Figure 1 (tube, rainbow, N blue to C red):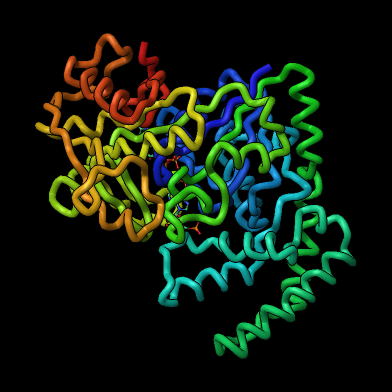
Figure 2 (cartoon, rainbow, N blue to C red):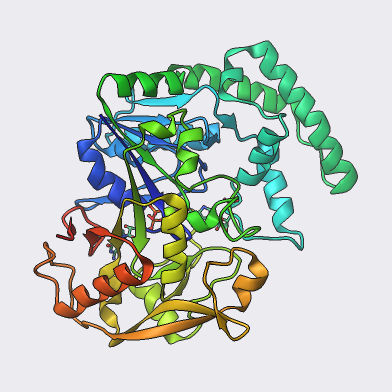
Length: 423
Ligand code: GDP
Ligand code: IMO
Ligand code: MG
């Protein structure tokens, strides 16, 4: 029996998809626990590249069962498109994919509200997938869930009630056209036929699987610093990517969790707005962006890039309870003669003892850097820790000590073979 949580340890896009793909070889079930189609998890196998948004990355291992938990917000259009694309690529999801009856549905008005929010002064650079407005309805107890697809009368009633309220808002407050009620009802009534076969009582299914001795990998989306409670609020997503979210988002109790794996990029990136202490706005930032192909897997937006931030990863490790980490994209740093690592934050002339999540203080901190010599050579063909240059090993030792993390896995390229143990 083993239940492992895999979390993004920074601001997302750490390479979670790649490491889930590696680890899932040894797991019976892979389950997503939060977020939605705002995620973009890339897996490269041979010359094929897959980008998963809603479906767990374990779907690429044909022995894995994949589950979408209650904590995820599901856009049925995105889900069906993703299933169709996978099937076109020869990946069969029939009997291998289940979605929670308690997951909330993203509705057309959520996407519209997301785009209206982004055109206001309180813009945060969202992915535009309707994530925030859907979670707002969930917590306001107005949401429509997957289970509602099974009762046509209830579904129609709930859509009518929600659309009445939303259309009043669109017309009176935002001076926009009302959304077509009958059209949305017709579309959502039809999802029932297509989605029915995937619906499961996920907490029961997963807890029975644990009793039967099956192993489960819980795949987080986004990253700890985008967590609505523990991240750089309000520049966050609307769910809990941190490890605690894996329990509420699947119905697996905390005492069943064995291991928590953090995915840590060897430097730092962020998409969207919000403070970023180690951000590089110079040619080094551009170099990281180009060498790391740092463009969003969901929106194609360029990712902001900066040096490794040890206070941030240390904070992330504490709130996630990381057992160990996988360091990804180490190869990207090969292009630098010297590499900087932020080891402390200074604020108002004093070294900070803890990571400030309030954006006012975080945007004013001065990073304190240590400079390490780079290895300046190609490491993408390395297949073991022993074969890494000494200076690469020194970099790993340095960040491990500075961020107080245990590094167990190293990734030096996007492919499966470019991954090895740090022993
Ligand atoms: P996720 O959202 O955390 O799954 O990460 P993304 O898929 O959004 O972004 C990570 C990107 O880096 C993808 O394009 C991966 O193929 C790529 N990648 C993952 N690991 C490595 C690595 O070790 N080296 C390099 N160069 N690319 C990597
Ligand atoms: P993966 O799983 C990086 C960011 C958006 C924006 C903020 C809120 O691929 O790591 P949202 O659409 O969630 O309301 O946007 O969160 N964001 C991500 N950044 N990786 C992601 O997912 C992200 N999902 C959302 O850019 O700043
Ligand atoms: Mg991503």
